[in-house]
Amino acid sequence: MKKVLIIFAHPMEHKSRVNKELISVLDGMEHVTVNNLYERYPDFFIDVKYEQGLLLKHDVIIWHHPFYWYSAPALLKEWFDLVLEHGFAYGKDASALKGKMAMNCITTGGREASYAPGGLNRYPVEDYLLPFNQSAHLCKMKYLKPFVVHGVHLLTNEEIENYKNQYQQLVLGLRKGSNQSAG
Image 1 (cartoon, rainbow, N blue to C red):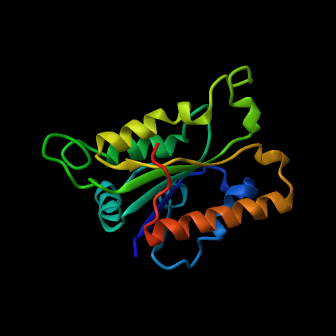
Image 2 (cartoon, rainbow, N blue to C red):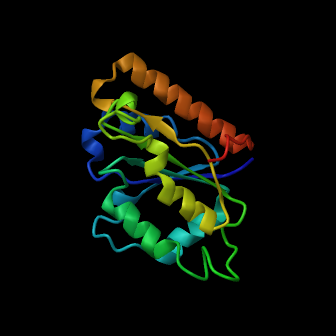
């Protein structure tokens, strides 16, 4: 059984019905750890050794966050800058994360059609996630296809329930060792 680490970064979690619902399906799931960065580090003072220890104890890393200005919230960026340091996550002799799987779970305000050629955002979401893909590659991790929930402000309760079930099944599958297609 693989261990899954959710690096959850939402600065306004209380206002996000979709992210709260997605995280709730993981609550109490065996071999799954939810690490809520904004709850743990409201002052942005990240305990690098603690975070690196979590990474070492898990096989699958999911960066779960809202899509802010085509990227991640500030604390998740800070986490990348500090935790994935040279000599630990990457570099000539670094292999701490080698072979682990990584992926994004993101929510967007825009509908899927807006992330396409001719759409408002011009490019598919995967194009905007290339820095995550490359970071995983640099750390010798396998980057998996992202789990994306589009148009969160317009979703019905039934659609949210459907996404919750999909996310739960995804995490259960990753825990069992099934791989999504790599990105």
